[in-house]
Length: 323
Ligand SMILES: [Zn+2]
Image: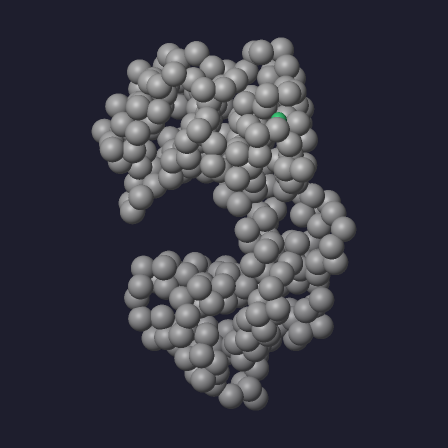
């Protein structure tokens, strides 16, 4: 059984609407799906593609040849496009045009364009005519983080559907996932998966040690830890994001501790509660800069050391003479 719709978490309203449109044969042929990354927009497109090509049912039977091939992404009725290198180029647009110029083999055919915001002008212009008047039984699914990120010429031709982050019950329907992981994922399945790995717990421990050492002068300078976490770019970015969440939690904790992401770390944060909002703001700003520097391939270790030194200097003013 390979009914794709059963693998989708959340997005119930959108799925219901699409299923009605497919049954009433009122589905638009050029669809633009917008919303955060990692929430399953592409999977929704694949599920609709399955219901369009199924040989048995408009709800997709999940077991006929057409359904199976869509699920495996080996269907003659499905073309998947994603950026190569920096963007989606005109050669790929030509592949799409060629695909849609052939005779339709089955019930329908679908083109899923991932990261449609990365269509370059040339490619977009090449596709305009086809998106404007798609051949019969041909459906386009354009996936993008936001409506505005897609070229105006493209988005004005598409029917837009918005998808939001997943809520907690969709993220963790039955598995035992720690609360902080769910909160920190921001409703994204890709982040949820990453944060659920055992290494992530280890990374959080390191982030916490770094965070605590900013204000506790009894703790030694964490330069060994910094060197260690900066060996890997992904881990360094992960650490800066965790530190941002810790700062956010400290600010939120003053008013409503139930809104914290890392509620379980509250006992650790208690001693930092005296920090003023302006210090927390500044710290957050520096962490954002640090994240940008790491993304930009600036010397990670040096940037993090500088962050730590300036952070400790700034915060020590407040922790020495509170109030
Ligand atoms: Zn089927």
